[in-house]
Image (cartoon, rainbow, N blue to C red; front, side, top):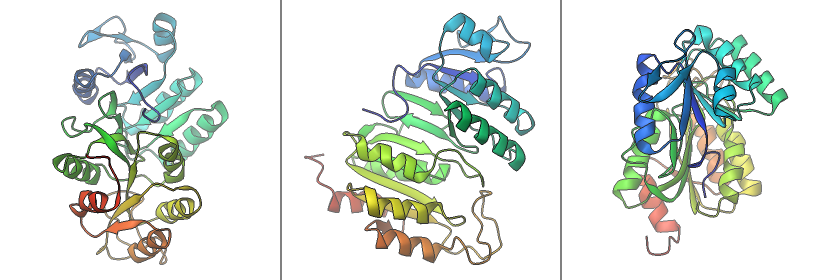
Amino acid sequence: MAILLNKESRVIIQGITGHQGSFHCKQMLDYGTNIIGGVSPGKGGTKIHDVPVYDSVSMVRQHQGSIDVSILFVPAAYARDAALEAIYNQVSMIVLITEHIPLKDAVIVMNAAQKKGATILGPNTYGIVSSGLSKVGIMPSQYFQPGPVGVVSRSGTLSYEIVGNLYKNGLGTSTVVGLGGDRITGLTFPEILEKFQKDEDTKAIVLIGEIGGTAEEDAAEYIKRHITKPVVAYLAGKSAPPGKRMGHAGAIIEKGMGTFEAKVKALENAGVFVASEPSQVPLIIRNNVPLGGL
């Protein structure tokens, strides 16, 4: 079982004819993703890697039927309208790869999604992969092999490193979810933790966080109350000075809030194993999680 995404999920790509859209279309097809169409205004009637291209999301629905997931490779200035087009055409989940979407636009998208019951992943996310089943994102495919570890993260590069470490230690992943690194994002740590808790194929959970905001403290509070599966965390930004943004828009310590030390303390108080290096994550799982001979 996987969370949010499976082999039957019907996926479209908005911005499919651009360089990034076309490149990752091929990567996702090779992984097995069920891509039913793409959208690029003015390019309708063409094909990218044999995937039919339409001028609008509504035309995809008209010709291909219902849509489960849309992934956006659209510049920030147009991302709001593209996301709203997907939301109002009843797409269940929108994966916003785009970064630097204006805060006002992000708020409009989140509000519209809430009213229509759509799920937003991102902005500034690497996407989601249910290992061995389907991938909707930009992550390298080779390390995402099926296994018992669910991963949820704010950071793409750290996710790739830790998933690679798990793979090299014989530990595959169930579903890997990138929440996104912007200040305002859709899905949260608690929402994904709840799904991993219910997923019978997920035996352990890896949480990859960073400084800034209160997402990790919120996760710790949720874990303390609701999660019975082992959780291992790694946090980036240990040496970051206050007031300096480290990569992501959401990774900044302001007025003493969102410090590395506060997040580690909150997670440890919730019973989470906190790794000091990414390479320690598989070792902690091996030493603390019964995996039935894996």
